[in-house]
Figure 1: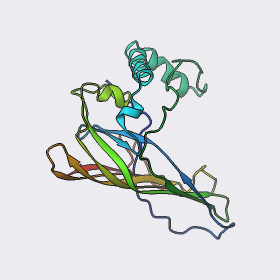
Figure 2: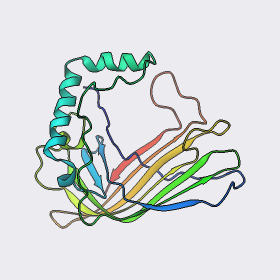
Figure 3: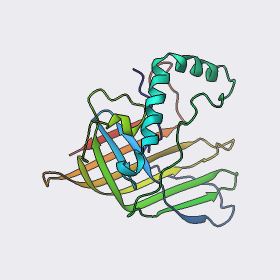
Figure 4: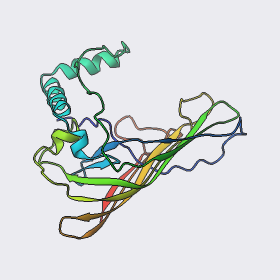
Length: 229
């Protein structure tokens, strides 16, 4: 089945070199994101600055099952064909998916977000967090890939827990003309599993549009890695 990655924290540290002349001082604020994303290569789901318990409400689980049923019915193929025909996103195709964000758990931390407009009108943004609470959950065998809760439905405890350093960068947030876009995210987590073993989990995602994508397969300039040791 086609894996559909929903609400993923896709990861990387990008280099923001060659920024045009300043158009004013940067805007700075504290934000409190809660992020989850799958790692199908290693068989994990990562919960960053949130917990599986907080995310996987009964409503969220029902919504993921509804979405899975929608895909398996074949209606998804018609929906994506509709999008490919540039007809926009027909509202109400699934009803409650995704459901409203659940209440945030205790212990979350603030990320520092900074955005700055260049002399050519592009918005450069960076978001950074440290000591971010992190849970690593094993995926079930043959996870459906429609959301973090159904991917881990058979698990009762986190595989490992700890904290992370995490960041994201985008050198052209709203795709202003005249500037190539590069964006991505990265994280490095120090974790301890149930047996007391120390683990390091790293994830990175980077995409630079200053490249030629092949007709089939990912572009050569896509970097996407997930490792655990």
